[in-house]
Structures are given as structure tokens and as C-alpha cells.
Length: 135
Image (cartoon, rainbow, N blue to C red; front, side, top):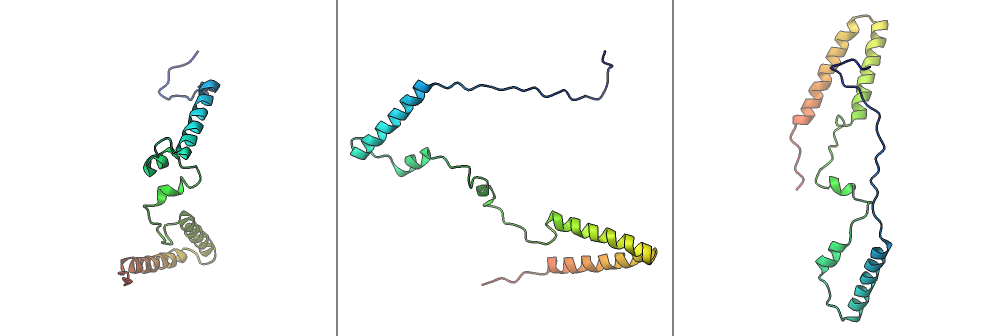
């Protein structure tokens, strides 16, 4: 017996497959008509299609489809844009803080605060500095 609850428990996922209908006769007819159209176009009996229509029938392959998505975006080359680099800085800060606390005591936090303020000042100096225009 199940008790009423305000939390929803997950139920096991069910396998649901939707079969597609395959008609070999229809597939063979489509292949024949495509082959006959190509032969007639090669003989010149069937009017030539425009270039746009012929390109519309070709579908792009999977290779390169994902790279087309990022064409409009420019990559940010800042060192702080990388997640791995930010993690490395956090790890370095924590290791320095723990090691400094062991060797120097609580005064290390003041030194790290000054170091962080200098680092932030240098970062914002280069970020706000106007970039030279290449002409």
C-alpha cells in the first residue's frame, strides 16, 4: 500500500518502440523511376532541372553538420573563458591558502587578498584597454 506523499517518485522507464512500415515494392518503384529519370535527362528527352532544384535534392551528410552551427559565433580567446582554466586557478588558490595557513598562519589570507586585488586590477586594465585597429 502506498502512502500519500508530496514528493513524486520516479517510475521505471518503459521500452517503447514504434515500428516503421517498410514496403519493398514501393522502394523498388521509387528506385526505378529515379533511374529512368536520370537516363532520360542524360539522353536529353527530359527537360534539365535548374541548379537549385538539383541541389535541393541532395541532403547534407552528418559530417560537418555540427560545425555549421557555430559559423556565426566567434570564439572568445580570453584565458578566463575556459572552464578548465578557471578550475585550475581555484585549485591553485585553495592549495596556496591551505599550505600558507599551515606554514605562515592566518596572515596568508591577507597576502592572498592583496594578490587577488592586484590580479583583478591587471585583468580589468587589459580588458578595458582599447584594442588597436589593424588597418
